[in-house]
Image 1: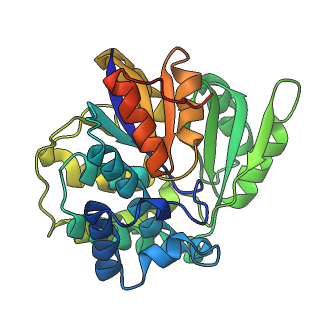
Image 2: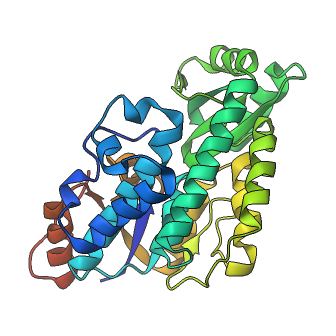
Image 3: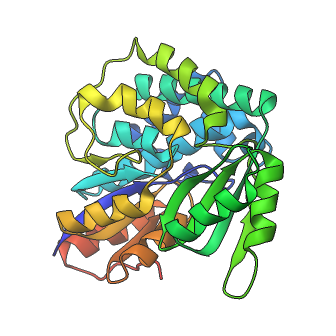
Length: 314
């Protein structure tokens, strides 16, 4: 049996009810209590509210809590992860899962990041679009063709054949229109701003100021960072978390690195199975598990123990 990596969900995958089935476990209750204390609202209630999850300042702490809750549910079942990675916001949750930040510092960081990004999205609105059938060269050519001097960058390298662009709305719309054709699809994303682009620089600066007072610990398990798809160290953590706000998410490369480590199974912790789907595209022969309930955690525990086959995401 190979190694297991936890994948912490990114913003956009949230759904009402996420994380709530893990309640009544002391280690999970601690997560929601710390989140609520540090963020100033009832995070557990927010996880069950469609209205709250549409609020830019609440959805990030809620999804972060759901991810950590699912990871703790796995730990309670005796599942030991060999590595962890997160997609964008998911990397904040991954800092706690890897043991680099306490719960309190994790949610203080999450709140600071969410508020900074939401404020910039109001003053510097933008858009994002997923390009299907894309590769790096074709997207670079597309950007050169349609940017017309506006901010337009590759923001998320999700999986082979799927890249997201981000920037000023008019430029993103031009990119979507120019991309569509045989074997090519473009989907505008329901986001408030141009995340992972230079338009987020003010948010990155604000986060840098906040992180001056945060101390990171060395990880207990490798955390593969979005910024460079390499293991994150305590000495680099603050700088990488700042860069992450304006840098592309290298998720495809992160999965490739995990594969090189010997990972052959992925457990998505947070909401839904978006990352399971991306991992499938990048690592077809792997097994993938979406951990949305205590039953899911128990099934994976049996799978890892070799007693019963777990139900993987297809």
